[in-house]
Length: 184
Image (tube, rainbow, N blue to C red; front, side, top):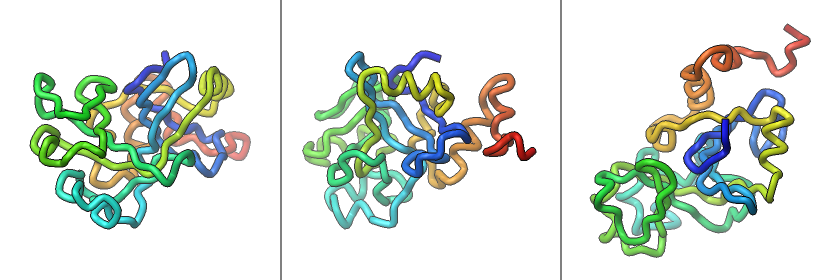
């Protein structure tokens, strides 16, 4: 499947990098220069209210920062879902469908009520030109379509399995694949 904004990268069992083992990454930007995304299934214990207090009532449950990836962990990115595609808030950058990025410098009163959900990620995952294509070719990632709800689950611990289960054909079988098939 073609890499594009809004697609999911699902770590294969072969991917042993501790930054990405068992992760689901939402691609936010894919260009010739590289790709950027956020890990959807790594919540932290840090409350959004403790670091970005004005956004405390805007974020979806659980109201914690998510570890978006190993790059730029001292910064934050916000992903949201529009309530009305004809009424995007100030500071909105579309990603795919109703999903987009929210500028955290925007006053919350200009955003509140325009989104059905929002999540804040500390850091991001980034790849240089051609790097992600190489990782996909070597079998580190499954590239699959996303659903808007993937980014805003109350309990993201089962996201990897649920995304894999809904895939067509034999790809869904990989949900039960052992890390080392030779040990099966």
